[in-house]
Image (tube, rainbow, N blue to C red; front, top):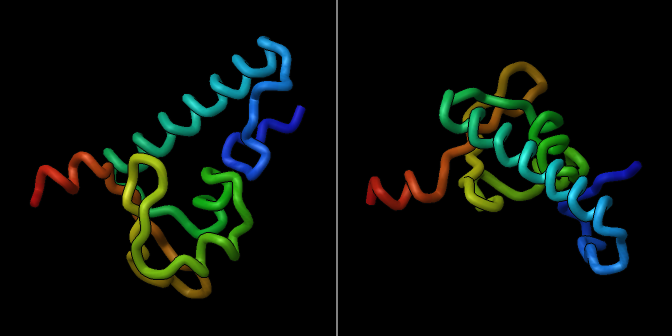
Length: 98
């Protein structure tokens, strides 16, 4: 089953309840993963970030140095070889620093 939680066809209205709950469960797991990446300070590659966001890797790299995604600020950290590394930081933690 395709569980695209962030795509342009996000409408859950036409799906049976079980499918909607399954999509929400996948969303919660994705958000938990993003939270762990942010809280541990892990750097992730463009392709890993794209997988997390359910988008194409080129959509990640074309967004620039820093941008919001859901509850996080995504920042380009550095390049290692041919890979760009990114860091996630919770928006609420960024706001507390200000």
